[in-house]
Image 1 (cartoon, helix red, strand yellow):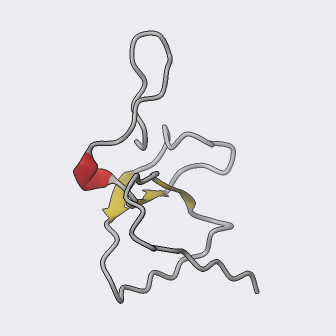
Image 2: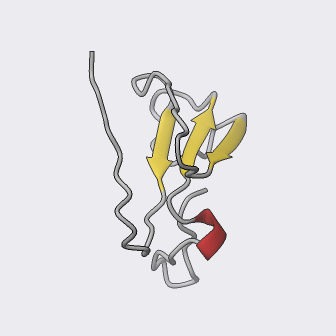
Length: 79
């Protein structure tokens, strides 16, 4: 679930193949902010030209950090 913690509670960076992935915690209860109650976890990897739409008010989510300065960007729109 996102970055992993080591035994000291320090967050570790995601593996290279996971960098920049959108993580959706499907079915998580409204008070859950970690994804612990999610029925399913979906990882959507960044691919050029891909558009992902979802209701961010009802789906717990996170975007994993990436270290590649390749000019990627994300656009967020609230309606």
